[in-house]
Image (cartoon, rainbow, N blue to C red):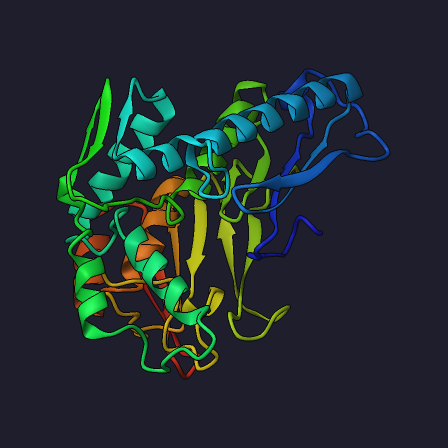
Length: 331
């Protein structure tokens, strides 16, 4: 991994660099090797890597980051059957939910309102439907039947997800949520806040979504490469980040069928996977915002995206079409 050109990938990593007298009170060389931790969280491989002139402080920071990631995973992971989100999906209710669960669900509902429901955390029944269909021995290539799709759609609707400080409830029978379109961004923000609170003012955090704190140690912007979703290792363009975050969404990230007609991007109104864009990248002040908007914008027409971006200061969107042509809107 380099710090000057990073490609968004399925590997989740946290990389932080601290340098200069303003950060830690003295000009000392970095440790010869970073403090590194590797594991898995939120369904992906994870690594934490911190460069720091004080090895003991670096180890404590890594430990704090790992603890926070594990705690958030226990809330948001669909891969852990005893997580809070799995409990909610299984029972339809959470009593005395964790503060992070409340915060993230309220944020998700806010983005649902901002995007006319394109971002909808209650689309999990559609994932269940398509996963069941395409894991059959001989699945119909046209996807689930109209009847089964209608049944799944009857369970979808963010306005029937009720969130309060002491209770979360799914009002629709069979309803279920997923936070996969925002949880990585939220985790990225939390880790960035932990590192900033520890005194790091020149830091790059990458947990699938990327957030920069300040500049690189030499004062230049952090440079992040936006990957071609169909060509692993190929970078389409490079963007500069200073105190901003970037997230990319592409249907090619997960396909249920070989033809790619059915992907992880579900339109909550139709239950289908529109292929409006090859990829959508959003630059925003926080990784949560970039993550949610990149998901929602994948389902919206350009005219509506431009309206939303015009009303959101410091948000920029890069839309890449099927021909590989990119249009940029916003700040």
